[in-house]
Image (cartoon, rainbow, N blue to C red; front, side, top):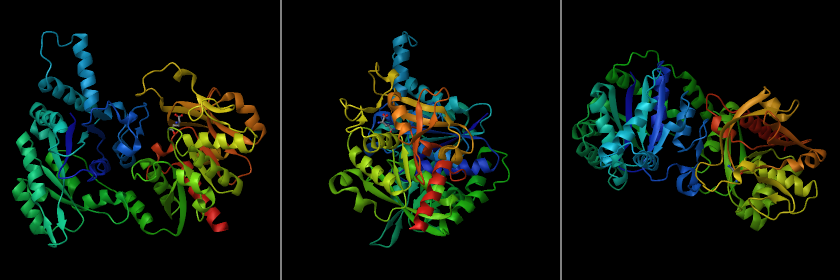
Length: 535
Ligand code: GLN
């Protein structure tokens, strides 16, 4: 039978519940346990797929094509667990399912209510992950304790322990100990209140993990323990890290968090070697070279909008033992002021995914400069589409070439809507989503990077390279280096005679991990370092 860990958050949002849950997964896996992770999001959208990256940050895509919260990216980067559509559950998804059952007549005769029908549905989502081969299911509850919208989730988790036995469940509360500069004091009151709210609901946390910017004294830890009714040895400190989030597993292990969890849950797990993670941190701390990469996108002001891309860059930097500074280049500024000044001092550019027309011309201009000057270029999804458009316009002479997403009446629709998208009316969950195979061209840069000729990568798009233009683009030197196995869809492009110019219709960033950097990012950073050295 699987054991369960529920992670709640207190005092404020953005404490890093996702990373902490993921790091707990790292520690348990290191002890030989099989973990699965899950995120509950209390908002009413069925999934984050229709939300703006400004609102919600990146939409993380799972192998099976679910559009999910970016915390699932942390789960996959920190553990070997494979995320699927059951691993992210929102209020919208719960209600959607309950209402469908009600319409079908599954509850005939009954009044359908939050308790028990909604809470039952939530509990069934937890049970679904507790498969025979899973030792521990870690479920993170989004939002902050005290929010109205997370109440049904917390109630369901309270009931959960009642159903399966208290000894099989561990409640971990991630909270904030506030440092008051003016008084030069650490304040535990907000944490006390937050735990108080949990107790009102009937949840007594077993473990507190205290986020803090300053070290917490033994006295304050003891006080927090006493006032929150948690054992002193169950209060852990999670101080802001200096270099990287990949320090967190080590930080928590040092204090014996994994021992405490295993003991409490009666788990056997042994060992617990996390030296590979220490090695990652050592590499982050001791880079031998430093370069700047440009992130040319429209959501650059939002820290989380390209989360997995930033992380994939970090992993590639670690693999190359380099420090890579990411300069965020706003494409709308390129449109206004031209690309020259904006790209100065950069050793490579990445054009990430996106939707809609805003900033696209700036991206195309930046790509032109990269192509003409030998600056390493890596295009992801929309970034690849822009590379194809740029090539059509400036090399093949197809003036006003475009994607029909941007200009419906373009004379050269180099990128056009996928045939099976035409009839769709609903916007949610209807893109080409999830993992698809891709065949790589012998002798291409892509083939060289991956070292194999068939790969699987995750997609999230409605538009694609228009096959009508394959011949003319190839005649002019664009290499269609990756296609679907039957050759129907163009998935990757390169240009000849350029040190590193590659675009992928898929999102390779979703598969990169610190312990397993993605081959394309790794080689892109290698090429950028080479570009920098030659300058
Ligand atoms: N907007 C483009 C499409 O739908 C690209 C999507 C993306 O970059 N994820 O095809």
